[in-house]
Amino acid sequence: QLERVFLRLGHAETDEQLQNIISKFLPPVLLKLSSTQEGVRKKVMELLVHLNKRIKSRPKIQLPVETLLVQYQDPAAVSFVTNFTIIYVKMGYPRLPVEKQCELAPTLLTAMEGKPQPQQDSLMHLLIPTLFHMKYPVESSKSASPFNLAEKPKTVQLLLDFMLDVLLMPYGYVLNESQSRQNSSSAQGSSSNSGGGSGIPQPPPGMSFYAAKRVIGDNPWTPEQLEQCKLGIVKFIEAEQVPELEAVLHLVIASSDTRHSVATAADLELKSKQSLIDWNNPAIVNKMYKVYLGDIPLKTKEGAVLKPELKRDPVSTRVKLKIVPHLLRSRQAAETFPANIQVVYDGLFGTNTNSKLRTLSLQFVHHICVTCPEIKIKPLGPMLLNGLTKLINEYKEDIALVQQLFEALCKEEPETRLAIQEALSMMVGAYSTLEGAQRTLMEALVASYLI
Image 1 (cartoon, one colour):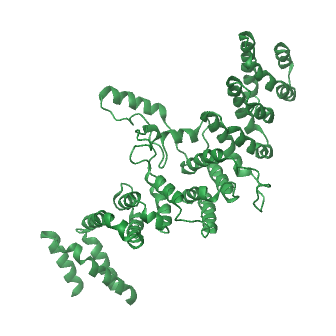
Image 2 (image 1 turned 180 degrees about the vertical axis):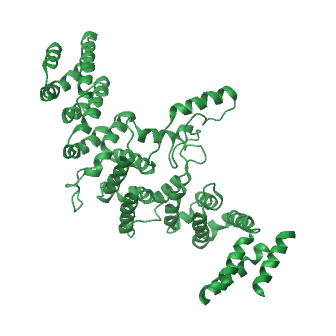
Image 3 (image 1 turned 90 degrees about the horizontal axis):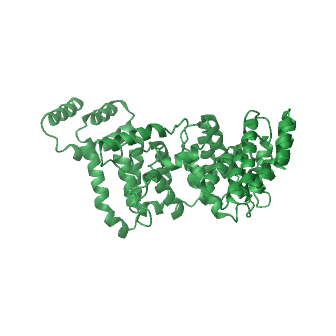
């Protein structure tokens, strides 16, 4: 039979003839890989090598993806067969018309169940770009939903985790592994005490090296393709294909996107769901803290040290600026120790903080003080006070700030002037310990505006 397939392939001259032979014979030929006879397996491999060359040079040839997906999901299939079947699913799915891809998208999700993670990631890479083209019913109902995920919690979690990493992925990011290996070998050669993270490329903010590698995959998306993927994810969440509670963080992350189309779509969806979202839900609050802070410290729940390639960095300042306003809505966030203090200190003194994040962090301090019950605020008091004192000390010699306020006092409307006067009076204590030249400068500054 294999010889006959070889002969037919050899006689196929047109794309149509070749496609007909592939559609008919590829699935059964792949099943022959489970043969106990080494000669048969060897012949199949020869046939597949020949087939690959012809398929790759003819991008319009369609593969029997639907049949291959059924075969891939067969619980009786041996791993050798499924390993080769998914290769042709990956090759054939992107060649399908968009309508057919959308039709098969739910099957991709079903096919992931119980499969090794690299294969799940491959199927995810096929699915995510399709979401942009999916059509969802106007009225959300389980019967009309293209993805029936209600009884597949593991698949939902797998999908949401991957989607979050896609939303965190910056446009145009390149994972330079070869460069990192060179750095690693030179570091090991020069120092026996090099850190555990040496040789691992810097992942994007909010991601680990492992997560970035998963999202990039074998064929990295272009910035335009990544934008479509992110829009597809927002559409998927809008259509309520997954529980709203599970996808709140995804919308918060997407609302910080650098591309206007993604950020606007996510913002609108967040606003429409604002009254339905319980910002005091511990699951939502903990997820926001987790992504804000990253993996600190490097310990898992079991107490083992987290591998450097799995360690997630904190998100970018841009994302933090979207997360903190939602923490300000939450009583639960104010009471969650130590994450609340870590966020305050990061916003006030973090390496990449800015004036907007500092302002939000001060508002969060106020929120903690007002919201926390006395029994919970007492242990936090000294830490918050230390942080605020440290912040004041950073600015106590910055006379330029006082000068700006005095200048504004001369120019602004009466109502604004009153607020500026209050601000200046509250700042007196911060500058009361000035000495030497700084004190002389301050006295001269005050005198020049009083005369």
